[in-house]
Length: 485
Image (cartoon, rainbow, N blue to C red; front, side):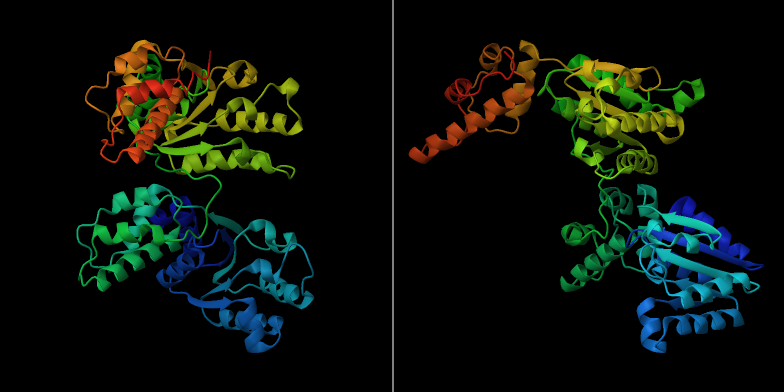
């Protein structure tokens, strides 16, 4: 169960506790708030028959007066029987910056010099960088709990709800919906749903109780990068762009739909695809459609997410993107306005050159056959991107997304018409013929303006039907011109 809920990290922890039956084991367990550090330690202690002793800075100071004296007392107790000694928020005991109590350091050093014959000592912290380096070297292993993958979220939900009375609740759908939820968030959501069911007089918790309480869950941790399900966009929701859609279907969607065939044929699919073309032609919409059609998670990245002020932070952010994508595979990493991030090395500063180098390292190490992670870039200026990114094995498939022709504009207008009530006499072919050089974004702006003109007419004449007419659309053309002439 541990590896289902916590993946490889859970398996490593279980192995350490198994070894503790014959020797003393030590570890640092790090992870953001709510990832389940205390919970997994408690479960493993119960499973392996260890007595748990917890040491927190506030409780030791309140109970014993001196923290070092309280820690010495707990260590003595932990030596008497096979035990799990937990130093909660160990960075508060031994901070990386600031003064450290010499007596506390001596107490912990004495423990490691003369450890008990069996048991586990574990220090927990939200970040390894907060702990004093000389203390980190005392511990034998370091395990970091990451944000749960979709499969791990499902296992956590199954564990949390095993004693709840559920009415045919599709836990898989809930897990897919709970992007960026950690263990504490999932437990809170289940409690809210149970309370909602009780307040409504139901004896069982149904899907509606989870749906109505979903927005009340405040995330314990929200990563700058979150792999999620995008807004549902199908190929049929995008008018025109037939060549671009076909190219993306072959180079991006097939990677996920026919992964087994790729393995059997020993074919390495593209790791990256670059969409290029004028602004407003639908590149972002196409990226969401790729994620939807392939049933993959979607990880959008903006330039502001990667440009950091501190030395080394930008490279760490790039590495973090690929780490999250691998954990949440299948996943599409979408890098919009790629030229702002990875311009030519000759014109890039030090930060830009380091970003390019780190990106190349990550994409070269990306094993798409195992992780099914695809990098999808978009740019208006492909000539401004460093050539090293476009070599084979990287963003090696170029897809042009151009300005739509008359037939494609008609298809786009028909898609827009689905969401806007229009009069029966509206002839979209006339509008399509009058909108030469209009992009998809321009046509959307035309419909928006036509809607406003309809609303304005309705305010002057309340008997007028609330629907866009041919006159509204043609009047909108005089206000909204093509963004490219």
